[in-house]
Image (cartoon, rainbow, N blue to C red; front, side, top):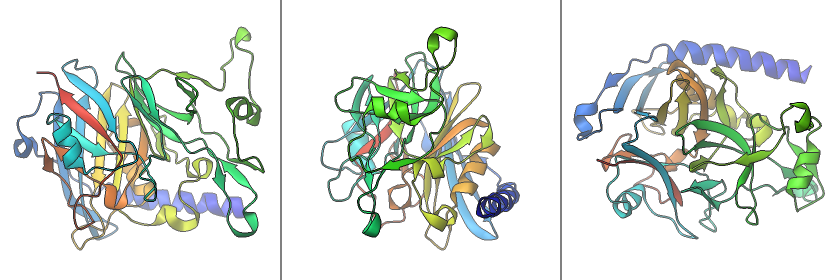
Amino acid sequence: MKSNLKWIFFLVASWYANVATAQLSWVNVDSLYQPLPASVHIYYTESKMDTAPFRAYYLIADLKNRNLDFSADTTHNRRLTPTAFYERNNNPVAVVNCTFFSFATNRNLNAVIKNGKLVAYNQHNLAGKGKDSLTFRHPFVSALGISKKRKADIAWLYTDSSLKYAYARPKPIALKKDSNAYFSLSAAKKYNQSVFDSSKGAVIVFKKWKMKTAVGGGPALVQYGQVQISNNEEMKFAGKAINDKHPRTGMGYTADGKLIILVIEGRSKNSGGATLIQEAQIFKDLGCWEALNLDGGGSSCLLVNGKPTIKVSDAGQRPVPAVFIIKSRK
């Protein structure tokens, strides 16, 4: 009965999200961020979401344009503002925050692949709290990657510092829990009951994910062109937090090879932010085949040619340990 109620609630929330996002009207603001490559465009909306003020920007770039370079940058045990990342990467076209991170250690909590090398890792063992402190949960968190052939993909990853590559599965994996603090790739394979023999033409659950660039976040928001949020599998937001409105950052791609970066302003009188369902619906409305939520709140920040888009919700730009970058080779 509880699962049925959750499903009904999700359908109702999705309907309201669809109605709300239908009100959005986007305006091209390329002229405010020149010079821009011909295949990069910026759009802005100042609309209403659930009758509340709403502001957002999205950037769209052609993945097939070989004059554009899509990359990531990360630090080790320290954080930099997006502007500092912009300056140390020789003034790229765009810089946007991406991974979740620990304030205590300044480390990424999601995978980052830079120039084909895995440089940051997912957190695969989460200890319970209180009476549940001896139980560990093992989420497989989503990431968006771009291959050398400029193909985008969202997958659910297993990462390990002893492995050269991330290992991926194309669909969310049900959350598992046990008393083991250490979780290996072999154990990860055993957790899934649908491991098939590749010699018979079936799909292997985990395979090497050879991406040139990738950044993790979660949950996934759009799969196969439809709103499908993998929060239960990834254990990102507990309870009703999935319905809270916050500043948001996300990234998705269309079936014809366009990358879309979305930032939503929030926590201000000018914009209340968005729920995950509303964020997902915006990506769907923009034509995304797949889309991924990234770190939001005070971290949400998109710079285009060094200029800000949304107004950040903190007093200033929040330092982050990793960013996604678009550079122009011309």
